[in-house]
Length: 264
Image (cartoon, rainbow, N blue to C red; front, side, top):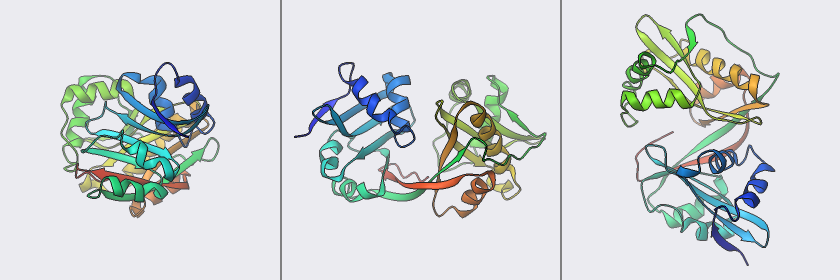
């Protein structure tokens, strides 16, 4: 019989050991439970000493982020520990029917899970690419670029300064300001997760996204065995950019919107 328990100091070592056996698959949970406990709420299904799955809610982002990983037969029970509304969930495609039972008004999008290993990447260089610094000037650059993205909540400059302080971010800086950026929100020896890739909509198809993604990937592969990211499967231009750098599809995930209206 599987018991659902909150993950705390009494059982976290057991959970971490399970996650470590496949860090790439469980990268969000593996990182959050160790490096940001304050913002991480996790429930796991235990069968004796074996961890059969989990649901994790991460609270530090503007919108709650939920990760569900388990066998379908216990998904419904674990989902009882998820928020009631207004969150984004990441889960394998085979669990979508269980998610839909619990949240029938959800909207979902298929994402390609892509990875490049050390020694397999192609890097693209330019003098207009640089690492953003922990200062107000570069935070202002991010504010300016992010103001062109109408599908995400607005953030204050202070928030961006905190963001730069927590994660490495590379930007393409021209005379008119920052036109593209890409960063890494998880850094582990096994893998860096790349995210936040964005280019000003008026300046796309000029290679700026490739330059920013290439730069953060290069730093990632100096420090980890692999770099990984997610791309919406029907965003063919983004997928082509990542493939140019050397990323290859290794699987799929569902990006599930429950009440936020956001899209990947």
